[in-house]
Amino acid sequence: MAVVTLGEVSMTVRSRGTSKDAYVLVGRFEQELRAYVERKLEERFGPDWFKLRASNLIGKAKEIRKVAMARGEAVAPLVNFTELGELSGIIQSTKNWDEVFGYVFVDKTEFDHDMQKLIAVRRPTMHMRRIDGVRLVEVICVMQRLSEQMADDGAWKLAAESDR
Image (cartoon, rainbow, N blue to C red; front, side):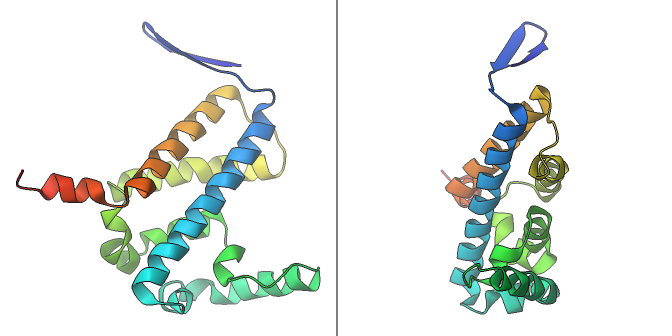
């Protein structure tokens, strides 16, 4: 259980195992973000989007996919062989941010800070090292914020620019 108190405000988060729960959450969010990036870029640039918009990752992703397939995994798109930090890099690359993701995520600097928080938790989480309750709360808040922005899919910007 984590209890976060600031002044008169208190929040309690219960977890049967913070490391296990962080593992599930980070894994789910990484899959959600990967699917979102793939959908947005494929809608805009077609099925060759990875080659066009993430060309710096092709060699590494192909090598990881090759090893995975040699171990019995099914063939999958190259984006499935990227990690959270690489997905963040795809989103924040100038051309992708300016043309696609700047309409989704409210602020690039805030997005980068949020992703750095998630990446900092990903490594110990994926290697089953302990995550404290406060860090778990922070990760939940970050994931919630980013998930809401993805679900909003840029409607915030249209509303902000509206004359109404």
